[in-house]
Length: 432
Length: 162
Image (tube, rainbow over all chains, first blue to last red; front, side, top):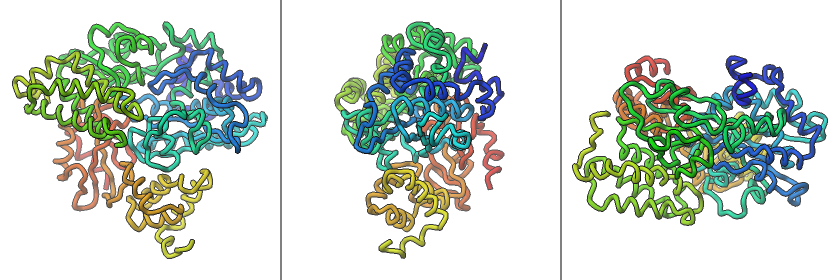
């Protein structure tokens, strides 16, 4: 039963590691794609994914079926070309879920993409893979080659008359490539600067053609919906959201790791039951629920369910679902300095608030951390947070995301910032 | 092929791999990043000569190609050592002691970030999250991901890379 409750990773435990083509097929592998291509119309596939209430697992939680429905049906452009792209550029700090899927269950992604390509009518797909993911690249390339040899990719798949080719683009770095229009520019061989929107990719994406970009985990949710149906899929989740979620915990817990659980599992259960609780001598003060670009949650939030709506109502985002714990040995000011250093470095440099504002914020945090903070610095950080966090002040959401952890830290850990400025020393300095 | 003298900079294998990418893309310029990564896999880095030859092969200006090269942190426009060591400095590794670990690694190799050891063995660079946060702190040497890096075991870790 374990597998049916964990459609993405249960098979990995059953097989005891990498799921190759033979093992994948022995577990109903490619049955979902066969069902879609030989028994359903593209519109029926889209309707099914919509009804299942699958939401994007890359962080934003946009309904997947709805996104697919934005692609014009039939011959959309003069040459009829459309593209399906997988965002495998996992670079959100604290996130390690897509790497697991790529390394251990790559055929699941291939099958999900075949179904997605059929639904939107794309003959060409790309997996945009981060450059440092060498082992995931090897496993995914092997899976693509094996699927091609078996006729699951290429011409006339399952005798349906549908053609789909899939290739891997190995990225050359930069976090901004995770932004879907920056990703498309990188795929086209250009600098990864986000594009102005609209037009959105489903209307005009890669090389100006209708394009869908979905996260690795999102595609991996699709085959089981085709195999087992909408009702079954919705029953997997707790509460409003459907399906499972890969949740992860990093930080000073006894058993850091990654688990596929019903979406909507409470935070405290993930930390105490699955991650084994905090290590002796460490107390949990706060956490970033879904990667570096999500607002801190604190004690009063720990009983909340990890789902899109609940975490958003608490002022943060479920994001990637892989949480980063801040224990009581960690200085909140210094942790924010680390986070803003990352975001300042990874800005593409196109918009002023991001290019100039984030390094300014990093300098202010460095000054405060190193005892050079001045009265008025916190108000300056507040103002910067407000301005840089304004979603209409920049082309993309890099800067607003960058500010989320800082703005929330200024709210929940303000006394730490004030003490640094007042005393001119970091009270946590001896912990390092 | 108006300037054939530029092409021999690239090996037959490199040109063949770049052409393979071009064949699967709508236009040749779209292979710019792939082409530079291919040359780097063969040579370790992308020299001015390589850059000029790639630009020529893809039918684009050297300036345009260099503006792309310098955007991406994994394209090296300077020579690097035999093994590029990338130490994660993102938040999960930070929480698990990446800052003191970085100092231990710098002391062990006798170089700072961005530098190469005198014997040409190692180049040290910071890197963002390597996606192994449950096994922090992490680093990558060449193509090998190293998890739960122990600052007391650096002799053993680096000793495996000749």
